[in-house]
Amino acid sequence: SISPNPSDNGIFNIKGELLSNETVQINVIDVQGKNVFTGSIANKVVNQNIDLSHLEGGMYIINFTSDAKTSSEKIFIVR
Image (cartoon, rainbow, N blue to C red; front, side):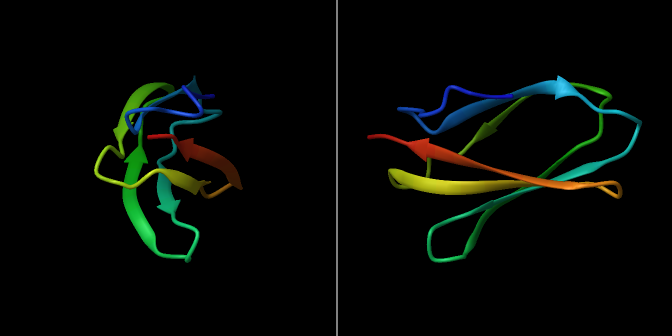
């Protein structure tokens, strides 16, 4: 899960549990398709903050990519 969504300061917390000990790549894409953040998660139990406070307010797509699957979610920064 990603919270808070929307965020007023650009800091999001990602919580969850991975199905295996794989590495998940995180990419955040802006509305123009530009990659504005890249990171990864490697722990089976996830509780990680990502800091997007340098970005302007608006909608972004966060992509999670592993060997097994890809998922996307919309996130919002409200200033």
